[in-house]
Amino acid sequence: MPQAAPSYMPAPSTGDYGVARRAAIAFALTLPYISLPVGWTFMMIEDHRRQAIGRICVIWSCVALFFHLLLGFVAAQAIGPYLTSVITMMGKVAAQPQGRDMGSPGSGM
Image (tube, rainbow, N blue to C red; front, side, top):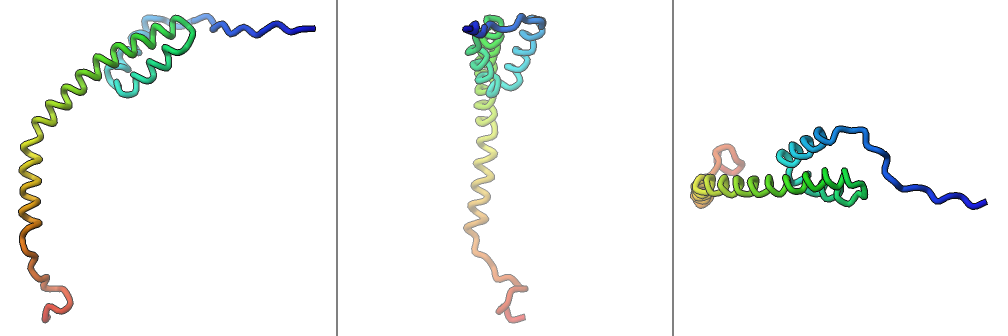
């Protein structure tokens, strides 16, 4: 007696689409580097509702990534002169001759 092929249809959704959408946007805005691959993963699922949530997550992740990269560039430009002065000061300290330590063996004490 042949068995019927199993059905791979997704289970009916009982969740609220609005909550899922808001959660996806919040996730994408706060952690865009993680939410981008998560959104891609959701877009690979055959359920259309999950694909829509994944698409929202990817779009907002791209928007957030743009602003994260822009703010990172501005922060790097702002901290550049400070880092240059610190590196210059460290170079001067390293170039100074080291005096003999008074407590080291062979110092005559």
